[in-house]
Amino acid sequence: MSPLRTAADLLRTLESGCYRLPELYQLAEQAGLADRADGRRVIQDGQEQYKRRIRSALQALRRQGRARPHDDRRAAWLIEGVAATVLARADHRPPAGPVCPAATPIPVEARQPPAES
Image 1 (cartoon, helix red, strand yellow):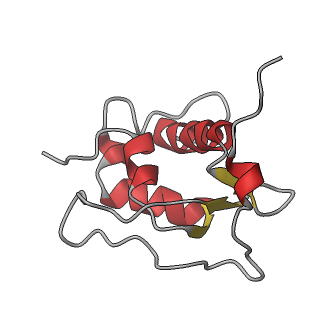
Image 2 (cartoon, rainbow, N blue to C red):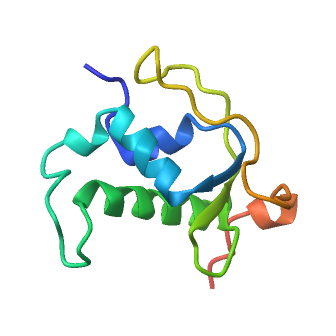
């Protein structure tokens, strides 16, 4: 059984860099997350459930200050990652380094979660 059980687990294995949504979806498929319960079910936005789970996990990272959209369309995300200690499979290798042009690291002040009002 894969040690990656959720989309959040997958995003935690990524190295810091810029990732496009199709690349994240492909990594989720390779890790077997698309085959989770109802993962292939088409939901109200016309996409499969596992893709919604990836986008939801990205939003959680954004709220923690560990990810931000790279562009206005949110098709690419800058993620503050960590080196993976446990990978889903021996053939699962996250992309190394930024793949988006002109990607810049997330500034330290932007990593802090927003103060509660």
